[in-house]
Amino acid sequence: MNKNLRKMVTAGLFAAMIFVFTYFIKVPVASGYVHLGDALIYVCACIIGGPWAILAGAIGEGLADLVGGYAAYAPATIIVKALIALPFIFTGAKKEKILTPATALMTVPAGLITVGGYFIADLIIDKSYAIVDIPGNIIQAVGSAVLFVIIAAAFDAVKIKSKISLK
Image (tube, rainbow, N blue to C red; front, side):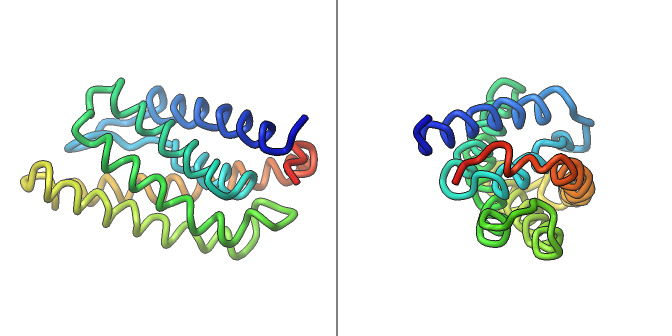
């Protein structure tokens, strides 16, 4: 199979998984919900890298906002989720393993992008939620970091990157 086609199909599968982990596995908070989709964006960025991981994250979580009644946040979500993939693309996409000290550390800037990005979105959409939303976004960032470490370790244990063979 063509390398680009394989990446496109893998990105599509990740977009679907990201949607499921965002839309169906969520905990309501003050102005929205906390979900587990970000962890899969991190994993996807480490596995496929480049624009495909950005698209998978933006599509999966953007659709979850549209379908879930948060359409006003969909543009912000698309931007924030594209940005949170970048640290992992730069540090993990070329590595043999998903979980490395560098990728584990990249959960910090990704979390800061999430908290800061949604703070800016809240200032634009509804200022009354800007401060109220911060704790939920911090919980989401920390939860996603923990889940990323768990999923990445499990995927590394079965050598998933070599089995997908996107090189």
